[in-house]
Length: 147
Image (cartoon, rainbow, N blue to C red; front, top):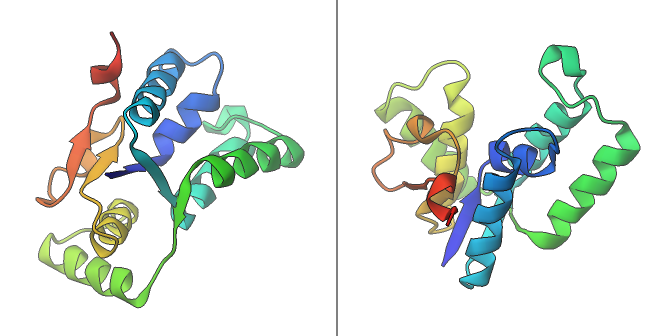
């Protein structure tokens, strides 16, 4: 059964000195060992690129374009990339109106909409609260995969 992987998991998995790196990697490893299909969206990839190339003093990783390109290529090889579609746009519009979504939270609504359009019901994320409003989206807590 497919699982959408949130951007924060992708970022933490490559951030060597972050205290959540091991947790992110273990969760991904466990899901793969359980035969789960790990998915991302074009939005996840764009957000990942943003964080990786943003300077460290601006809450980014400060990576070079070349390093970020290598990491992004690995994501594209390892994960199923879910395409956008007219249906995901319709779902997004429905969600943002129904849940009165404002500001930066529209990005989380977009992920939820793409999940719904592709029949995916689970997301692996460190930010469970961002998805609680969406009743058809179940949050997987990465820390639950730590033995």
